[in-house]
Image (cartoon, rainbow, N blue to C red):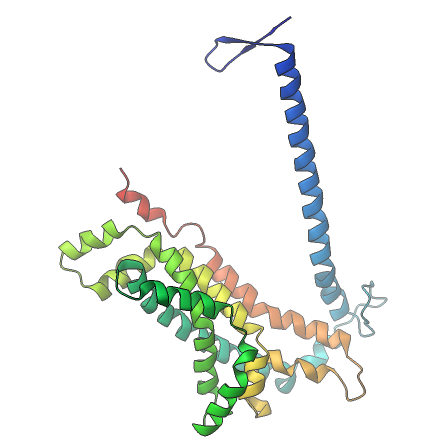
Length: 300
């Protein structure tokens, strides 16, 4: 016995019962795999959601502990306790100056370094790329002792500009690696057309390449800023004055000398601490996925 199945064109296709059973078993296995993957994603999502739930609930609980619990009495006391210059405003401002300045330095240098490696062929290019890839995996803690000694000798210790330059330099290899990958996707034919019209290299880079890779630059900027925003070791080693310390370092102020932690105030501070990253993603995230839309004009 055979089964007739009509295709979209209306032509009947004869299938044997064995083929029908195999198709049904294949569909059943696909549904089972999809269900298992969905369940796994739900479990992973719940695991990541628990710490976030603790931060939100603990921030409104003046008697918060490490356990996730519903506040018996909702209160804004934790926010009132940290709503001052020394605890919140100055550290966050220092973080914005430090990480924002270092991100600008990193991204400008990354674009200028990635452009020749993406567009030109020269001797030693492969060696430079391998060095950059190796540098992305180099732990920053491995070089902080000689860096600290160097900063002391050149009188840059406890200097915000010096910390900005070093933090930007330490993030540069990964930024170059990301930026070059996105720049490779920009068709060079568009640049060649601009060159024939008399545009220079710098004009082509700023007017054509960068706008076309806007989404890629947004991704690289977000990754760079987030990596700097949570960096504790670099500012802890290079900045000594309490008034210059960023928020990532001043988190220890919520621990008393007896080892007790003000969990509620820490949770409230964490909400403020995460706001700049969320705002940056909202500002730059709208352009993700649309940066290469104009590149389709060269196809065909």
